[in-house]
Length: 381
View 1 (tube, rainbow, N blue to C red):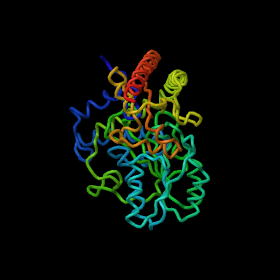
View 2 (view 1 turned 90 degrees about the vertical axis):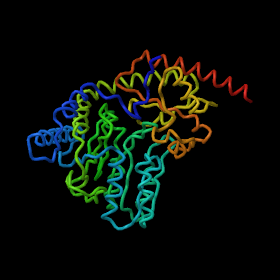
View 3 (view 1 turned 180 degrees about the horizontal axis):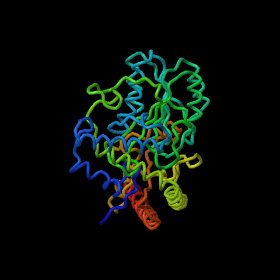
View 4 (view 1 turned 30 degrees about the vertical axis):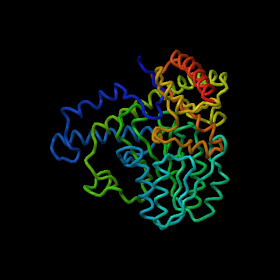
């Protein structure tokens, strides 16, 4: 039985064209980009070309792109790196941040910082009144994600960034889930730093970037040979960086058509979900076009994911990074969703290879699995 993949927010399949761009640097062109000979020169040019491709997708100069080993490293580089040059103050992050922002922010408390979690509305959008209240206190760092990894809800980062600027706080956004699904213009977001990643846009795992304002001072996490303007020492992962660049170039060319396709598929899905009585979280808020986060009354999300996998459909119970936890989604709890409802949450995230027939097949399977689980629950009671 072949599985149908509906978990693109966890990771996307590597595009064949990206793989083709990477292959020479996995085989014959194996030079170190810091070496002075011909092999090194070829590798350096490949890294420089990829940096230009990444920069072009988000509207910055190539020098503003600092390559990292992924989104988690980039988020840590910003939070810890910015704190390294600031006096301890308040660090304010949204209550729905990915753990790779929330946890390093929490770690700053041991260095004398105060952590403030910014509230969100019941639809999962940032509460700007709470942002104003938070910024009334001396704040050094602010981080608000651009699109939520669970609900897909898009945040008004530009409005938060403008407020942070007036308060003289350094502003960052994690745009990992937004890249490739909506236009992402670094300068329009009013931020000093932004995190992006390759494997969410049909590129390879192990490649990310922190896009920075050239005036931003960051203390590096890794000290060594001074790679990436001294901010990320270590021999560059040339094949992955090349793949990141290729994925960005592809995203720029197909984003509009792909997003229309994904939006139509999600509407088809959600018509079916609504007919089953599902709760769709964040449905009234702006969302990236590929994501639907829902729950069926009285059905445990983890159980639903397992049973759907048995019949050939790959979805997620919340974020991939927390898939081993039985606790209800922190994002949904922050939105005011009751824990009993939050435990039923399932994330469905579409990608370029999905079709209307696959969505219809999923809805049929979901109805059958839900009915079976309800019967089992009734017997157990």
